[in-house]
Length: 159
Image 1: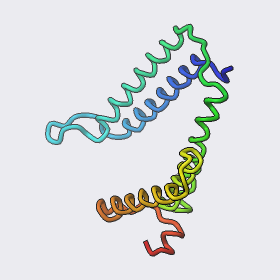
Image 2: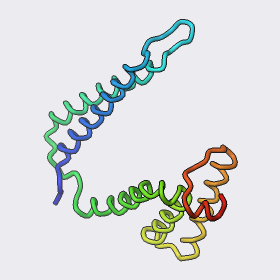
Image 3: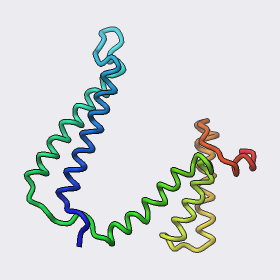
Image 4: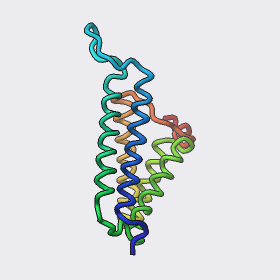
């Protein structure tokens, strides 16, 4: 048994794409959208065209969904449960980053995912996320010299 039918979700997705395209168009119209012979495209040139394309695609998807007789189920309760089992921890990761920092939040997220969804041993559950976070640190902080958000644990470690 499905919670919602496929056609309704397709119409909602088309409307969301159209709304996003409209926002892109509105934002680009606040900039110069033309082409200058001296400098080439102005700052709003590309966003305006991409926003228009998103709006056109949205209309085509919406019309195609309206014509479609498909009323099959979009997602079952079990499928939704599996999706939320990944989505909710990801939202918590993003929400916690300003407070925990990028590295600590990512470490906890990876540990959780490996233990709960990967069913890994404790050695792998601790070792793999630690190596990934160290690699993130080396790549972002040292190689690219881009500081990620740091929290109290990183401050304590002097990172």
